[in-house]
Length: 406
Figure 1 (tube, one colour):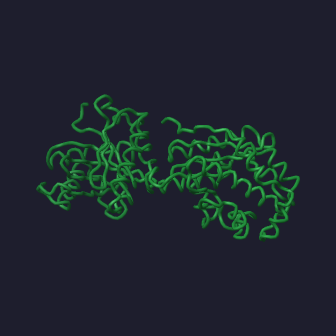
Figure 2 (spheres, rainbow, N blue to C red):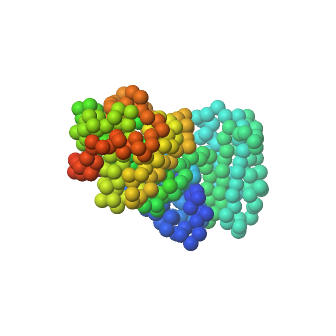
Figure 3 (spheres, rainbow, N blue to C red):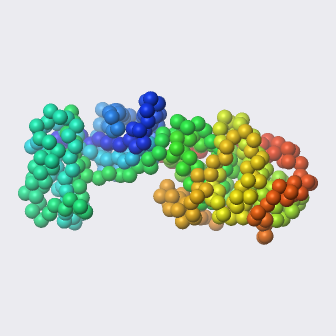
């Protein structure tokens, strides 16, 4: 390299830093997840110190991060790993205050070559207490050097157009941007859950939110071909792939639900059809979850959003699940909040594609919104629920869904 620094990545841990005696477990899982997420780009050295993680290419691909397009891909991949607050591309170098000023001015030159900025400020952290200048003095000297080089700039400590960050450790670091991470806890620290995944907006967001709490995901999708098309199945696979960018590999279990749904449609009262259908789904999902070692079910339900999500309907549905909790991470969110998360994780445009799932094809015109126990007893009188559940579990195909490379 022609310049006197090396580009590496600085990542910042979030709530892991607050863990007590178990902190080491969370840190090891985070490091493993980062190695897994970055393996497609080549070999990296990943070092954790206090609440920070330093990532740099090994000698075999030492110049990887010098390519700005690739560097941004790697940076994005890092921030998709749950457990990180943010990450930055940083210049690492050795030297003294003169070198810090030189690198800060060079970085400012690069920034101004691409942006018409007018104001800036400098922030500094001095982790190496042997360094002769304190943080405020470093800020003053760097700011002065930048103003001498770019007299058109002014300092704005409240709302600057850009910030030059300086960190003094055993080596020296200068950088300007922070890419926000998704926070949370590393996937693999909170067991495994079975996500009831549809082709809508809510369930992928629910899966993402539980993965952000450290949960490994598997998913079940109820497919009613030909009433739901093969394109609907492909849409669900695409949504699972989007979620897998954050959660890691997902086993997607596709339940052939057509005959079961026709049976329910024929033998269950129309105003209770949605409830009876969801109860059978939950029983199938629970049996599969136990088989796969999952400890909970996960749904995208939000209280009061539709007829099957009133508190009475949720209670009636819940009672069929005997061996594990049902997590509903969206329960208190409104649709706009859920849509905002969906957009942020890149799922929204896929979720709104016009391919219906089994829940929308056989929807009741006037569903009962406040079902009672006597209603479900009457609704299931003509149904052989154990046989339907057995049929559903036996009619499952499984797909391994992995994130898209780069």
